[in-house]
Length: 379
Image (cartoon, rainbow, N blue to C red; front, side, top):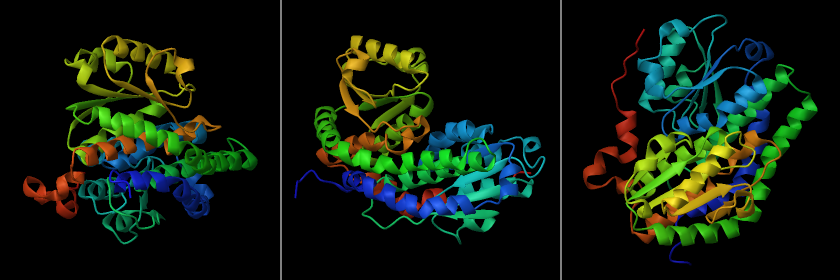
């Protein structure tokens, strides 16, 4: 066995089969979970969660708006539970619909958020692996996730499943609301399922590049992840995986704000910079400008894209990811390279995932720091 193999990278290599398996499980569930009337009643959607689950909401936000035609917000659980104005909750047919994502279902802030919004009259759809969890108990309906066991690592498989569940829901909403035909809805779904085969074909070359980059970047103290629109969730997720897998500092930002903030960071030659830039993005022109200036600053740079170097005209390291037929399906696979890089850096520097919840981090063992917290229902 290759001494640099690690659980996080093995999770990435399991994704092609997982995507197909989960499609077969989730596609019928997402068509049946809400009635026609419940979908018609939706006037506004709030996606909420913590950590990776909140990132899954970011990945699906635009799909809900594009497909369902419904204004959609991503609201971190603590903002929804403690700060969101109650006058905006529980109006007109239990709106907004709150879709809360948590694999364990027992994250305190998510539980707190759904208990508050339900008390104020919202309809809550829980997306979780644990039907009898706090999230499951306090939701009006539960979309049950069934993620096969795998060796533990910072959420990779679980994130893919959450993103797929939300994308399938978005397709169903648009289908029921007659925004397109049933045939078109199935084409959207088939494109989603096909991402597994497309990723499988690209993984060998992707892995080789990511391992090389990780070796060259392993001693950097800081990493910067940049993306906009549909690409932003992948950038956010990348900074999270670096923190979890390696314990090193990481930043996330969109391509415009990079010019206003991260652009000024010193020691540019030692800031590993990951840009997610797909050619179908309306923001690609600004992303190209950001890449040009990052190179001028001497930043070590990789670009994750559905295109290659010829389309950018800049001398960066390019990692090709699947090119779906429909752009809203991109977040389902485009996070794979950031997980490979984080996984390899962790093993190259001998770092335990999540610091092993040892020593100063022992309080976080078993997720205690996010599960055990005072519940306050603000009404």
